Picture 1 (cartoon, rainbow, N blue to C red):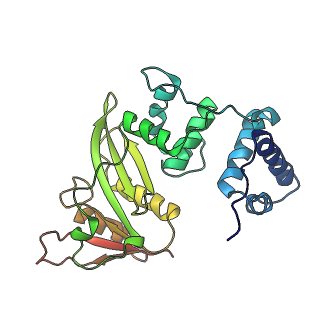
Picture 2: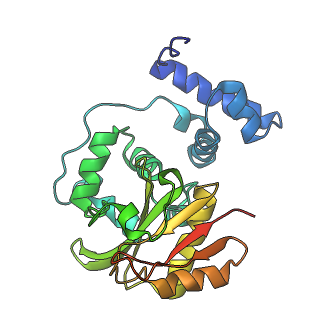
Length: 254
């Protein structure tokens, strides 16, 4: 196995951002630039947005280090208002739902600070948007066997920071998660829109499940989603003999 590539210095990362903008100016697509510079399309999109917003100066290396303390009215604390104001793409970020990458990009954009995964989890806990613990193993909710690799767990709940709001969560067994916030209990249409954004985020064949008794992700909601995308959501009958029976759906891309 080849050794991992060495980490780039801040100056090298800055030079890569400038090369990306130059390549885009020559007519290359974001996908081509990402392949040329061995980076992701999302990074190229971010650099392009930074260049359009602040010019070449906004491509300069940014400071790293310990983020500001989580205290009331600090800039980092006020970032929670962005998460509660709607999806990230409505706020100029190249994501349809809030996940780890989207929140880290938001923090970097607003403060110039790059945070680790563990620091990010501290912020999410403090902002009260982190996914709740599962009541039991998702496989126990299923009347028929499900592949853990395809499963997406849907949850909903109400929090306050400081005002009350509702959250819709989705998570994968490997740890990926997504969330959107609402000032009211999300309507059926808003729940369907959340599922639509998940279909864009997570490719492949997915199995949607929800904890029994979830206030919003009910069998009726999943049935409504199935009617909305009949070619992509296939309902799976629940086993009435199972005490953990709950309606599931399989999601397949067009």
